Length: 56
Image 1 (cartoon, rainbow, N blue to C red):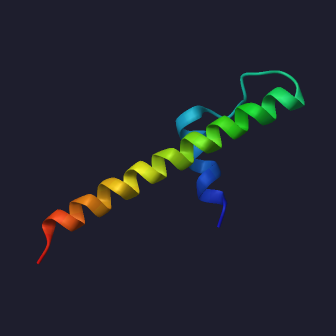
Image 2 (image 1 turned 90 degrees about the horizontal axis):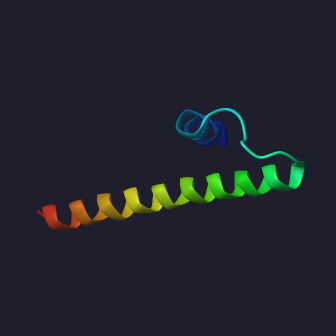
């Protein structure tokens, strides 16, 4: 489901793009989506590292 991604980006970054023009707005959206994916990656790595050190 894609809707949570839009909600998370809108909550963190605002509901409007800052640049004018379709091409610039598309590039801004790509940057926001990339940042969102990096945050997910860092959270995943942190969680797996914590689980690995917790061990049985």
